[in-house]
Image 1: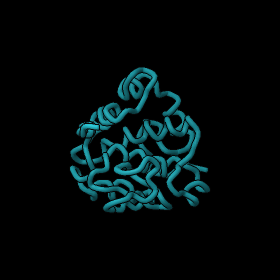
Image 2: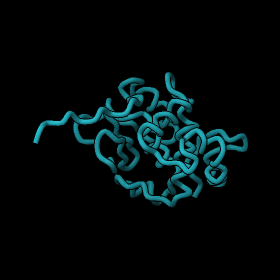
Image 3: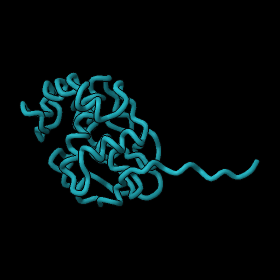
Length: 170
């Protein structure tokens, strides 16, 4: 069988492009540590280069997409205390929570220097996230009322739709 060059990775912003400090500063107030690893990524549900979760640690490599680090970090913020205590790889949760995670990762992207909500939505599309209206921006702007309501009901966003700075209320 002839050798085939692997398909190039989607053009997404990587942790190595922005550095660890912004992610650490973003998640530290929530009690989530960001740890850089080489080789295998502990707690990665999909395997490298996707971010991983174990306990109160978010594991990334330089080639981990920033949107993946945000997504997994937001799973930590959105899960209840019992799941957070037992967290190892599979964040679990129901579909409404998953929608909340996606919405919150877009909001938090604007808090990272040299990154943005617009860029994370493009990266989500490039990576293969699937939304009913065809792309992340259309979903976020026109179809995410349920995600916003879920985040508000659990204390993760305030009345103005901005991150509250708190973990999910149990």
